[in-house]
Image (cartoon, rainbow, N blue to C red; front, side):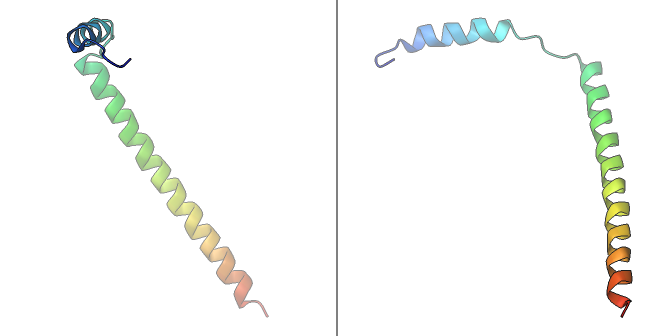
Length: 64
């Protein structure tokens, strides 16, 4: 691709970008809210799992 024409390259980029199906504002907002909800749920799950594992380890270590 040495010596490629930069003007032709930019024209091709413009053609390809015009083919992209961009999400609407509503779709973007719904996706964002879904991601935030799932992140919150995953955080709560891992917090609970960590607390349970910590409790089990402490229980096992305290038994002599």
